[in-house]
Length: 224
Image (tube, rainbow, N blue to C red):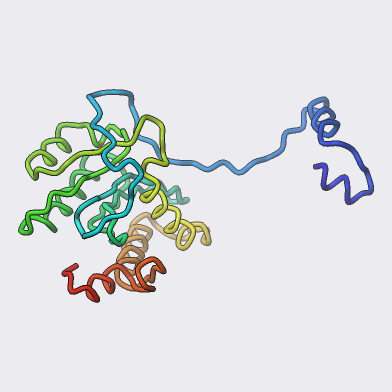
């Protein structure tokens, strides 16, 4: 507002602008970032934060990150639950659905466990403190696969910043540039699914030699 007044050759201080706006009950519109959250309180003891913001890994299947993000399109809401490998950003597994329920995360975890079933790897699986990761179905799957559970501190999204970064790139490149007015929920799910396949196989990352995650693993002789 002060800058707009300056263009009209009206020079006033920021405090004066704030006071006048308050008097006239004027409120500056601000963009609100909506973030899906599943935190329902401390429903069970939380594991230690083993990752501690160390999102680098020396090999695949050492550190996995997971979370849920929400897409709100005119046709309805869609939720994505991925498992991200810290080694190269590969999306190990993912599920997309219309409800952020136990089935969404448990199915994704089952698929991730399948990828290491024959290799003996025991990744640290890091999540926020959402209820999905504290329900019996998730915990029993973790225990049966002898995976190691790690959790962010309460209300501290930077503790899972690498997963948040993936969501940010996905939404900046795919979601935000479009209006989605003529897209059904089913079509949107297919589009997100195609994006993740492209992300794994074709989208280059400077940090891994301008290769995609799968290309990077192939260059190292690692099966993806």
